[in-house]
Image 1: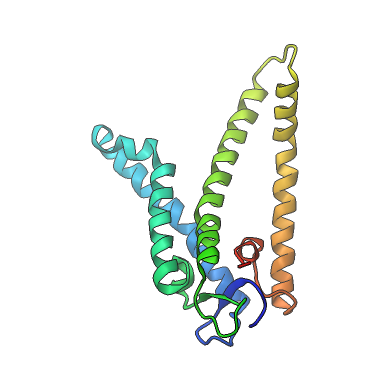
Image 2 (image 1 turned 180 degrees about the vertical axis):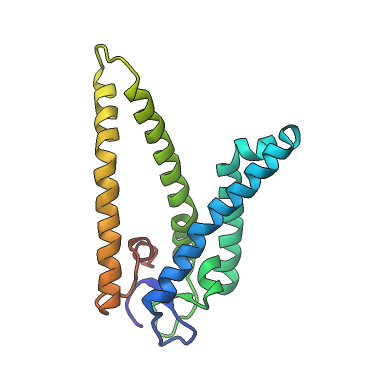
Length: 192
């Protein structure tokens, strides 16, 4: 494991995790936010005057909690919350025998674990709202900015599909032992 980059390793430092462990830890993190969102929604509906603010700013509160949780686990366990749950660790492969993350990999991992999913969710919400508005609007003369915005809205499904294909190809390469990471975001978290 002397390649340059942060990647996941299993319980022992020389063992790569299986694709099943990797996909299980990803599905755990994908399930946490909807479960918490539902709990906050029920709480806000039961007492809107007291807990309504939780529902109104759920995404930002979740981002704050996610950053605190992931920072704690990256600092103390060299793994994200879900990776630690499945006994996986992130190791810095740039230096021989380095079993912890260096500072650069730590901050990249934190940004890619928390900020990228937050920004993607916000972008998808804005684009969904824009698509709904566009279905019921009358288009008059449009400025250059409005045309570019509409082109971006129209192109997003293709960009999102291309990203999913890239993730799938990376996972296939990981299964066949060609790639050391299962995710392009994990590959981006590598150290210099």
